[in-house]
Length: 109
Image (cartoon, rainbow, N blue to C red; front, top):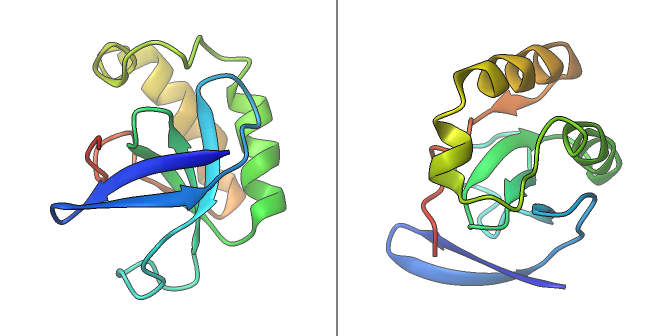
């Protein structure tokens, strides 16, 4: 599937996998964008990122697991307002060698 994100005012279309409804896994379009060894993004369908991870398989597994926590097809702002969900997502990602971006760093396209 194609997925659209906006970075620094530029719209990028990337190839993505949907591990759960509303979630996307894709390679970051700028591998030198300050993400070091975390080139794979687990993101929301809005174009916002949730976490950066080292490999696609880990991001897909995380997407499947996080997919059971909430309805990710909801708007990003609605999900972002759910503090209890943010805590559960952070607790899930913390031991998994992921950089938690909590739907905030990548703007919607």
